[in-house]
Image 1 (spheres, rainbow, N blue to C red):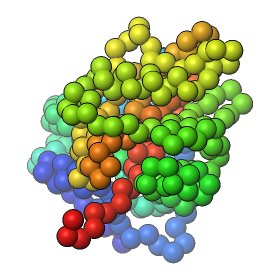
Image 2: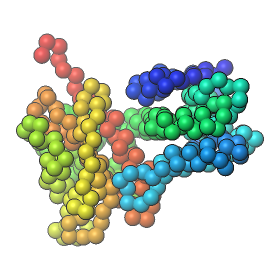
Image 3: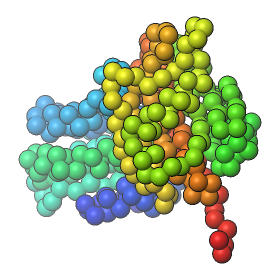
Image 4: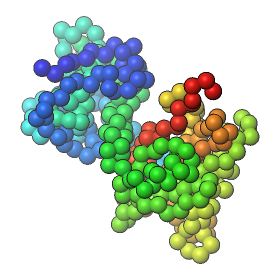
Length: 336
């Protein structure tokens, strides 16, 4: 029998900060492969709730626009079904959210299960005594619920990158920067210099890529939004555009947003915004992650970009964002 975990507010927060493995259920040897596309969500919700305030709240949370992309795209592509329609391949979807309203339930809670009928799979069950309590819970914990779903997608991507890697580019990164990084197959090495490496993944009508660069750390002033943007422009200029003399730069039309966070006991500075091509007409979203490498006294930056003028950009952006979680710095030697 699959293990069901009831999440209180504290436990939900713990799941978000420690990752999904702590609450993962054991999978059967013959379990099926999950169905569905990345960031697609099956929402099992009764008609009465779907057409009322519960449904309005769910749509506002799950289909909120993804920030910092060039067009409006939802966080998730929501496919709503009733309990009667939740069967066969629908029940084997990769992302499932069930909503239950039952007067016999004493308080509103969320339960999370993994790999229930397929793998990899995450199933969230939200239940409460009435519509008002469910709406209040959703309003208070919208960020946590979204993050559980996003982390499930991220973990799948990270696992794929580790399993189906690109040994050539990974070795070039190790030699140039002294770090390990999982790079999925399909990327091509476009440029490699002592302080700069550029790799790209080309599709028929889209492109995604990243470049790593390193430069001396000159104190806290090196980590302001303005300083990180200036450094980005210096190295992005090494990426040529489609016409002679053109090159990548940070768009001046939108000021990049700076966010600081901790990951694996390391502080990262996230810069998110839009890039342009100086001397040509191209552009798209970018996100960069910078950290101070204490061992070398240098700033290391992973800068990721997407170019997709005809296709949606959300999944491309998420794909390059997940590259950060495949970076590993050398462990400090004992006694040093």
